[in-house]
Image 1 (cartoon, rainbow, N blue to C red):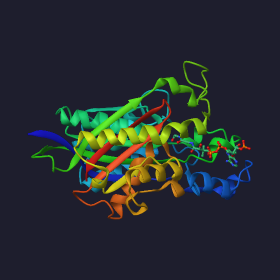
Image 2: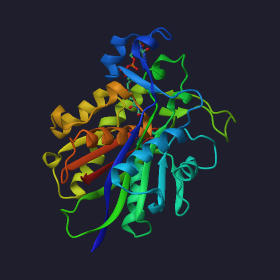
Image 3: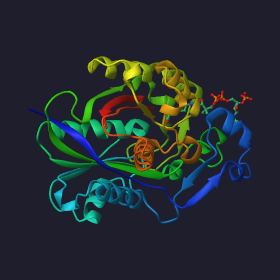
Image 4: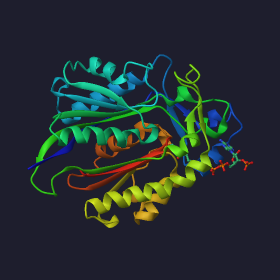
Amino acid sequence: MALRSRILGCGAYLPSRVVSNAELSTRVDTTDEWIVQRTGIRQRHVAADGELTSDLAVAAARGALAAGGVSADALDLIVLATTTPDHTFPATATKVQAALGMTGGAAFDVQAVCAGFIFALAVADNFLRLGQARKALVIGAETFSRLLDWNDRGTCVLFGDGAGAVLLGAEEAADNKARGILSTHLHTDGRTYDLLYVDGGPSSTGQVGKVRMDGQGVFRHAVGKLAAAVDEALAANGLVASDVDWLVPHQANQRIIDGMARKLGLGPERVVSTVARHANTSAASIPLALAEAAGDGRLKPGQIVLMEGIGGGLAWGSCLARW
Ligand code: UT7
């Protein structure tokens, strides 16, 4: 029998400080109306001074472990997706590992910006399916506010901080109806590196740098590339769009989410959207949305859940799971 990664629990953490569009309009030349119309975003959470990505990640990880009824010493893998590590090295995942009290196994970071959670999930899923790990935490955690140029209205209104985590357990899958991750599909195209990047780094400027984005350029690629990754996921599992119970997309822009839902023929009641309250939390957005929809009972055992996301690289991907 083949092994499959089942999602045993989800956790989430959002910093307590909420910044409204109105507050941002006192800092840059923008309005609540523009931000809501173009993006659907109404507010974002911003980490407190001294509150680090690892702190957010640990809080979300504890939630996922509690939801799954698993203690940290049973873990043998942590894969943390982040673009905003506490330090250039070591991996922030190792700090999370220590804070959770996990002393064995391995913990490392994965960097695929807004697609990071899908990439981290794919890595962990492959470890579990190969029998190289039995219990894994996949975390998306970001303090993206630290990378923002607060004078650039084109980017500073779009992002927020937060963390989400899922606990995975390897289980024997008797047949294709077994619960768990059905498949993951990853893509990058480095020719579009300059559409969305940070203008710093250890090897280039020696400074951390700030986010620079050609928003329209990214937008032009988004729906087409995501739709192709979704078609790929459905075809790989012999499913069609009407089989999907829930779309849990990366939360960058409500217009992109709506475009994907339209392509799939899914009504808004089958789409999990948190972008209005969380803004774009990069690698944290999908696990935050999963934790919310799992926590309030929307996601039910056996349902087909489709995740997708795109971000800097460009890097994009999809994941289908039977909840
Ligand atoms: O998760 C990572 C992936 N990133 C994304 O998915 C982002 C994808 N892109 C987008 O979501 C959209 O392109 C944005 C929300 C970033 C921008 O929306 P848009 O409809 O593409 O607007 P635009 O960039 O074409 O800008 C339209 C106008 C411009 O003014 P002019 O040149 O027409 O006079 C901008 O300067 O809006 C202006 N503008 C703003 N106005 C008020 C740009 N930012 C703002 C702002 N407030 N915050």
